[in-house]
Amino acid sequence: MRGAAIAVMVVVSACGTSSTVSEGSPTPTAGTSRFTAAPTAASPRRLPGSVVRVSVNGLENSAGVAVGDPGPGPVTIVLTFPFAVDRASVERWGMSGQPTRTWLDDRTLQLAFAETEPSIGFKIAETFSASGDAAIDFFVVNVPRSSHAVNIYTVADLAAAGTTGVAHASGLWRVPPTDGYALAPDGKRMLLYDALGPFVGPRPTLLELDSKTSTPLTEPFAGEDWFSFADWIADGRVVMVGRGVWVGDSNGGDMKRVADAQSLVRGAVWLAVPDPSQKRVALWGYNSAGHIAVVDLTSGAAQLVSGPFRRCAQDGATSFAWSSDGRLLAGVDCDREEGPQKARVRIVDVTSDRTVRTIEGGTYGINGLPDGNFMLVRDSGEVGAGARLLGLVLDFDGRERGRYLGGWWRMSPDARYLLQTELSPAGCCGFTMFDLAARTSFQFIVPSVGQSEGGRPSPHWMRDGRLAFY
Image (cartoon, rainbow, N blue to C red; front, side):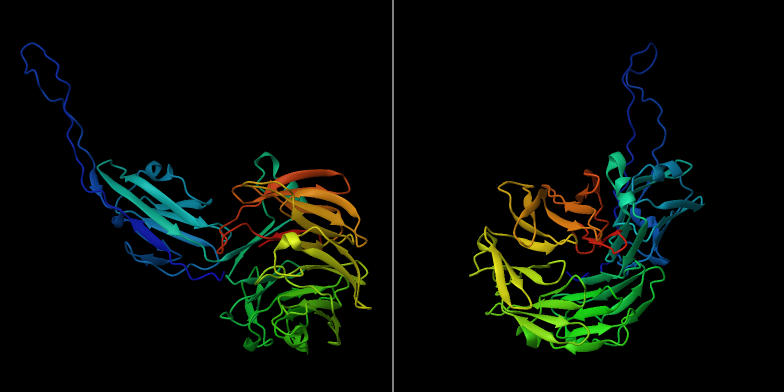
């Protein structure tokens, strides 16, 4: 989903003047009236929430007036009250996020939220003057973030989550919203692009995470529409697959179209999967024959592989996994569009274009593992909210090497760690990390951190063994 510009709204409310003089309890005493009122202190004068001036990143807005999205950087909110404030009456109310609070003077509070804070919102239910003679009814400040969070963790960061289970990232940024992201191997740059869907965004752009300096790529041009794949490959080059297969240098410069991707698969390219050497890429798009194309990323030479690899549902895709030597390719195939229960895994010898084995029994999909095996995901038999999936680790001879119950699985580049996404009725946030060498595991939580498109952030192993969530 493309992040739309979301307005920042300050909601105010006035409850009106409500000064009520209480009566003393009737206490009969000699020589006095039976119903003498006890003296009371005057109630504070009530003011509406609209008397509080609110500015967001220096832009002040009146009650009920929306201002522009503050963007991906840090957010500074300044609250200006009409009188000297009893500070405790303000500070007792909770806030989303962890702002730095600074009283600039007796009537001005500055709240500085870090760039990585999730959606910012708080309600100040009642504010008293320092003298006690006035009170402001509640006001609400809401600053939804339309930007996208990028967090990087080491395995040690995740293991240190401790009893709370909530991991703290060693690198945190927010980037402009789009629907396609690729993180550079150095973890300092990001490629923003349009992924599957109607093309409405800018041309692909390289973003420096620290400085937020952005550089649009001169190629591919806007006519490429959306891209099914974009990333840095092992030799440092940038590869993008849209209508064509594009290859350029590590900065996205000198991009050249080495192959006509759509012509090769006879339609839009939905999947592009590099082989382990990252010298070739397998392309899949819906076609009735179910064939794929394997393209050399240097020469652009293409080989058609018959498969077939046919989709299992209307508007569905398939999934692939390469063997470690790049000789075999496993992919999901269905005779008809009858769903994952009827799916099989077909393993082909790419060079000879020959099926060497099939694995029946249904699958939701497969993904390759750096140890040379692949993960096959299928129904576990569990039912109800939070029902887990069964993940089978298989080699390319079809032999089972391990099994897990969870949501999805990704292995670290050195094959030491296996990250398991957990499933729960709430559907959010939990992960288990298996140390395959030490035969231990630990659990942790990565906050959703206000993703503009909702849901939990997606994990991506980096080549140096860190994990990026975005």
